[in-house]
Amino acid sequence: MYVEDRISNFPDHIRCHILSFLPIQEAVRASIISTKWRNLFASISTVDFDTYLLCGLTDRNVDSFKNFVDRLLKFPDQLSLDCFRIRGDEIASWNDGDHDFDVSGWICGAVCRGVKEIDLYLDNFCHTLPALLFTCHSLRTLTLVAKDSKIFEVPSEVCLRNLKTLCITNSVLIGDSLNRLISNCHVLEDLAFDECSVAYAREIIIQIPSLKSLYLDFFFPIGALNYVVVIDAPNLVYFRYDSVVVKGYSLSNMKSLEKAEICIWFDSSNYETSAIHLFQGICNVRSLRLTIHEVIPLKSRFPILHNLIEFKFFGKETWLVEFLHCAPNLKTLTVLLQDVAGTRWNIDAPYLSFHLKKIEILDYTTDMIEIVRYLLDNSMVLEKLIIRVNAMNATRASKARNQLLPLLKSSKKDLIVIL
Image 1 (cartoon, rainbow, N blue to C red):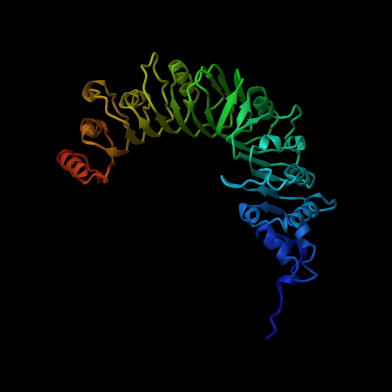
Image 2: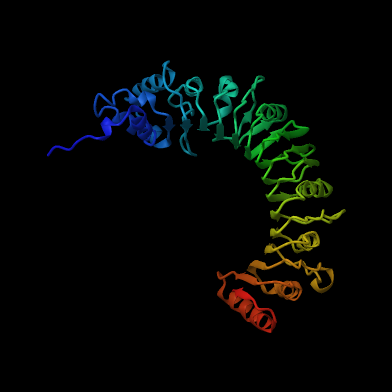
């Protein structure tokens, strides 16, 4: 029975687009279907080396694979690349030294082909990244994930003038090197440092007018917190900060901020005043998720968050009280308390917003009953109350529900209550 091969009659650019969705080994196999497909693999726009391909290599075919990659990436007169990706995992990495792959040469080949996106998961990538990568004018997105955290130093010459997204994960960043990298990405919109450490830094300076999203997840050796975070990003919309509190913060021109997620803890330095400066910098935020792992006495008050309408709080009861004092226009409140300190809610707690319409309490325990009572009595326009009881302990869950039901029934508010 004859079946017409219509796909082979598609124009070259359409067949190249089809090949770009296949793993690289499947794209090569497809290229031997007919003479019309024979050399199309060299023109595909996405090159993706995954761990499945790496684990499938043997001593017999590894040399053939190296020759294939050389032809794919290093020959001249080939079309530009949309994406070059090397994916590894905790078990296998393309530059682990077992196969002697020229990963640095592959990256240079992708750069020479005008690549727009590079995504690398490598074993200690700092010894693999060529200097040519940091002057790639075609690059729009750069993602670097290190299998093992090692010192990552940026070369002296950096010019990523069209880079819009930069994400570095699991690496030790040298202060001057880090600032040099950031300061030479002039149109950056998304910047993320995930599970990174910073060494030998007095300041981390992020001054990028185009920046819209910023994620800083840093960890530091004990006693190495004597530095300042400087952020000047007038168009920043999203900010996530996950770190121990450091010596100082200078956050300015963040009037466009819509959403912030802050997760902080304190070491022995107890920079509580610095924490206040951090919150002053984000005082225009509309949605805030705050996680505080421990509480120390505050020496100054929080700034008033006039624009805050959604607040999710995970931490100690005393800091929740402080924040409720500072959110006059709050509409939605979500609370997960680590413990209840015994705050006298009828005296110490603030007067709640006339705008608060929804409250959700997570992992409710019986010692939170006064908090619920206060919230019910002082939320003038409350429409919905959600109380999540931990169902893992059936006895405790039943006791919590029996405690709550009389209080909820006695409330004069027309509420939607979910237990």
